[in-house]
Length: 304
Image (tube, rainbow, N blue to C red; front, top):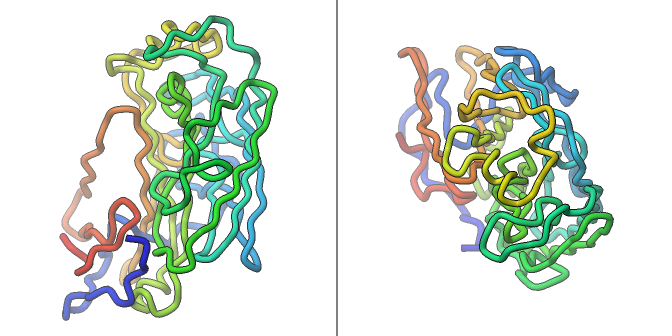
């Protein structure tokens, strides 16, 4: 539903120390620099972001080739604005949002074969989970943005749109899995309105976790998608061991420090062509609880 809940019922008990939720926040440093993709186990860094002001947001996403070099894979990918993931987009209910999507990729090298992987450098944009118009110039997945062109999307966020965690990604039929599997996605947040959720949740510090599955081990793999679509970019100087890769904000196994006695809220998004993630937390000193899913708050939260 598009109507924001006027109140979320919380359990009549104290929040436990180190309690976490599936939409959570944490006490990591507020860093927005390009992370060190090659490292393992460094502190989680936050994606760069753009935010609306005075009811509007005008921003640009540029899809271009990007060389990703991590500890488990070195590959060429298609990404937004030169990073994995793309910038976080933060908007409010009632906003008008304009996104100019520029396709800087080169020409496709093979003809398109319908209902197969094809057109690896043709793209468009989809806002996943938002209650917005599916008609152009809004969230139309039928837009065909060929290399060297741009498209301007305009979205009207409903005045009563619920706050929540959503995401955006490429969605052209034939190239979605290849582009999204390579990193063409980002987080989109509709800010919570005062009085719509409990104060203790509103005031928690926030950390975004964009979990991205890079499918080298599944069938079809990213390599198979590239081969079938006639894509040469993905296969150039590719170093990988046929294992699936999971990145968090583009990083490998990053650390998230939690402060004892301080509640944390993590906003988590999973971007995957065909996989799910079983989230667990090791040790007994902390617990993880669910606050919302698919951008919708639970009626009674948090829930174990």
